[in-house]
Image (cartoon, rainbow, N blue to C red):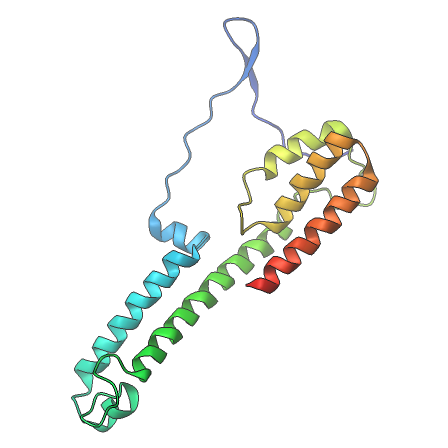
Length: 191
C-alpha cells in the first residue's frame, strides 16, 4: 500500500458537483526570503556588483591616493596605466564578488535539491508498488516544486508520471527518464 498525502477535501457545490475546499492564500515572501530560498542569478549578480562597487569605494576611502595599500589593492596612484577607478585591480574585485555571488546561488540550489531527497516524495520501502490511482496525488504534490532551472527530482517524477499516464508503458517511462537525466547532466555541465 502506498503512502500518499491526501488531497484537499471535496465539498458539494450548489449544482451538486464536488469542488475542492478553498485554500488559504499563499504566504507572501519578502524579497530577502525569496533571495535566500531560491536565488535568481541575475539578481544575485546585480547585488554582487553593487557590493563590489561599495567595497571599492571603501578601499578608496581607507587608502589615500599613492599610499602603499592603494597601489596594491586598487592601483590608485599617479603611476597607474588606467584612469582611476577603471583599473585592473578594481575589475578583479568586481569579478571576485560576482564569483562569490555565483557560489552563493549554487550553494542555495544544492541545498534545495538535497532537501528534495529528504522529502520522501515517493515511497521508499521495498513492499510498495504504485498503482495508477497513486500517481495523480503524487503528481499534484510535486507539480509546483520545480522550475526551469531548479528541482531536478520533482521534475523527473512529474515527467515520468506524465509519460506513464499517456502511454501506460514502463519501458517508455524508463526511456524518457534516462533522456531527461542526460539533458539535466548536459545542462549542469553548461553552467
